[in-house]
Image (tube, rainbow, N blue to C red; front, side, top):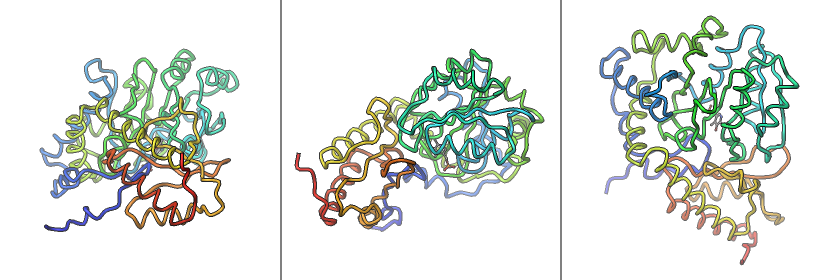
Length: 377
Ligand SMILES: *Cc1c(COP(=O)(O)O)cnc(C)c1O
């Protein structure tokens, strides 16, 4: 038997980067030129597929823009490209990713109004309405679909209806949800949605995806505060020559082509969601059996990532717990909450219920190594 390094890779139960399929990695064993006809076809195919997945390929009215960099580069590209010069951005916040949007805007010199709530509390349509009444100058409203800080799902469709009725531009960070959690762009009045190659699509890191309402994108012309992150110019480039303006992530595109084939073979959003839900259910059942408590009310919980409280036991140390799991080949993630000691376990990427079972076995063993009692229920 040959040993391949990736057979020894740890399994990533994190919000990203995520474990990817062998075929996705193998698709990258090529070097394509940025102007090569085959490469341009791949880019065109990926853009069309993304619009298809969003359900707007037939109806039209939306554009798919690919932007070099991680997901946050995509968020920054939208904020820096679409806000009018003297515009104001209202951010509806219930986690670190909403905070990050506000931070990006502040650094860019964009006026920001923050509407905050606890991380276990969803943004409601009535809260969005109240925030808009309080900040009537806001041109754009930004919200996160699945707040990966906790795993909470915000009801973007009904928030969007409020924003749309108020005539504002809606920006949705759907980084960790797009392609799995349903979102009707038209009904939700989404103007700009940001996602990444390396979340639910299970491509490799390297670029972000922006789905933009064509009319809103055209209105953004000339507003960019950055050359590299200008989504209007990037779109013009992709439309006119099929090319990226600057060196494209060719290998990440090859990986994405393969990852999207796997996504379709799995049954698209329904199939992938089915696997992620099976992962999360397995995790929840096992963790509950081990005595762990979840941070979120289950009605707000997504299948993407789950936040657990630290056990109350005095022997528990997250650092030790993390390291012992890491030594066993399982990577979990620290919490990012402002008011509770928690850690997170992601259930996305090339992870299957049997991997979750293996993780649960490792957690049980680790707890006993740490002398943290396991709940015998
Ligand atoms: C992962 C994630 C991001 C950031 O993506 P990076 O690729 O780490 O830059 C932004 N928002 C949400 C909701 C995410 O889950």
